[in-house]
Image 1 (tube, rainbow, N blue to C red):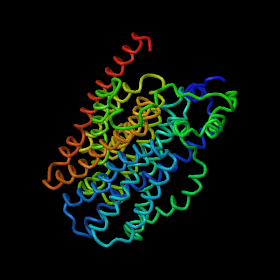
Image 2 (image 1 turned 90 degrees about the vertical axis):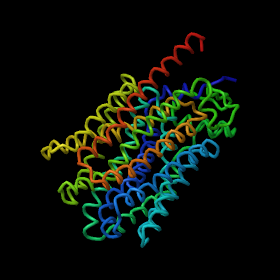
Image 3 (image 1 turned 180 degrees about the vertical axis):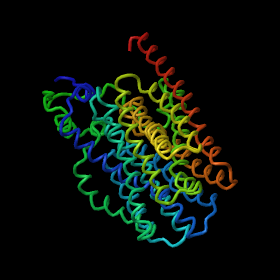
Length: 443
């Protein structure tokens, strides 16, 4: 009986129809997720006018979904390592779709906030599981690029949300924006049928025949036999838990990774929630303000693809440091009186280096944590990051409420980028130190 390492098969596989299928469905799920997340920034100016919300109240209302996302990322990320990523993805998709659809029928801020909280639970849980599943099956040589391209569905969902808002809001009202959640509900049975289960989960469940079948789809030429013994090259004696993230030299890298997630998400949600409102206050029309949101998310797609390409060829933590410094610079310049083409360019760069960087951070976390704790590690990183997402809209609301000059608002949004850059410098040093220690020990 041969012992065959699962990682060896996956790492050296050629990109095939199986990989494109997994990436396509995950890409579509993230479009739905991104649409749901960015929809609040699109409808915010209308809600503030219709319900008479103060900036602080509007910021708090936007944080309900993000608080739900924090709990969802931690809860569903850990749960998926126990019940399987496929079931975790399905439950999350069902939850955020139903809650978002219900949002279109509410009549007051309280009902709106409750629906947004439950939508956030599903959205927060979906991201780490989708990224973990794609990372698990992507060949090593193209892993960062594949995960980054897949994650482009998330900002494209934001582009779709803002684009739909430009057309729908003046004609049908903000409620119609939420009815699009019926689409993922219709497609969910097909998605569940097509998506593969995590091979690591199948092996832990002793579903060996299914694991063999999935690996033959990953690499049809791997010559895997039915009586081959599959190993994952890592210990799976302990169940996935929070404590596992702090064992075997992972404690400090985990903490600085959490700090980078926190700061990056603070910037993203401060910008996505308040960019249309701030630009409207600066004298731009609602349509123009929403077009800035389109530019922000379009830039994220470019940043994710280019950053993923660089990450596979240079060094992902170094790429993240450079992107975060650019993020702080571009966001801080948004408050200046710039010509419109320059303003669009700055917003595009800001999207590439904030939302695009967050996509690369997910790829970085997926590569850092082992297969058996990947969803747990990414879920906790995402959950801690979501607390930064909660702070972002609240910070924006507080700043708008005290009538600061436009430039100071954007400088405040930019400062977390510098902190995140320092965190990733430390992460790179700690990771290098761990690799050196393992090499010296002959591991």
